[in-house]
Structures are given as structure tokens and as C-alpha cells.
Length: 131
Image (tube, rainbow, N blue to C red; front, top):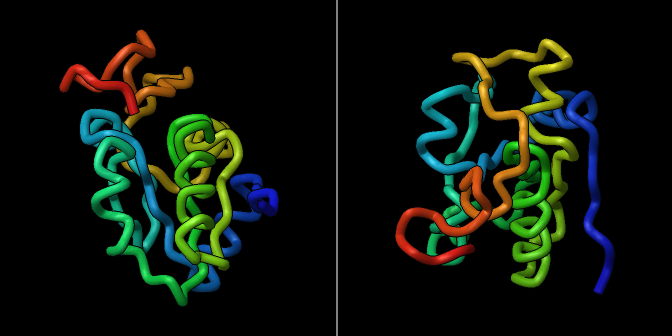
């Protein structure tokens, strides 16, 4: 399998400004706290990603993002395995996006991974299962 394309937030912002779709895979509580302020963002929580990935246009350039880039990398590989060819992972996620001063709504309080559906403990997503 090919390696995933990974882009920094600066490159991701440029891609978005040129029409790429931003797919945010953070959970609802994370998005409620702080979100990307871009013209078009699709919210598909990682805990629902397997069921909902078909909502993402296969023929469009896509940038996948999360908090620090862990879940979004897994989602990027998932999309690649399902025929998506124009997909890139945003390295360092919204944490680095915020550090760069890029457009946001709200205030980012979580500056750690949350590898399991945003769980700070890294154990489960609240439904008793880890993604």
C-alpha cells in the first residue's frame, strides 16, 4: 500500500482555499469547543467514520483533520483503502492550526491526542468501545 500524503496546516489551508474539502473527524464535544472556520467543512466523527465515509465525494480533493493528526491519519488510510485517491492528512491537526493563528471558532482547550474518538484517557468513546 502507498503511504498517505501528509500536509502541514499551512499547505492544508492553501488546498482548502483552492477548493479542497476539509473533513473533520473529531467528536462532537471537541468540535463544540473549537472548530475550523473555513467555508466548507464536513464533520464526520471518527466513531461514525466507517458508516459515513461514503458521504465524502470520491472525485474531490479532501483534507482530513482531527486534534493532532492521529485519527485523521487512520481515516486517510481508510479512505485510500476504499478508492479515494485525492486525500491528504493534516499533520498536527487543529492544535497546530490554532498555533498558526488560522481561522477558528471557539477556543481550543485540548492540546493532546485523544487517539480513541477524542477520549482524553485513550480508553473509549463513551459508548464503551475504542475506535
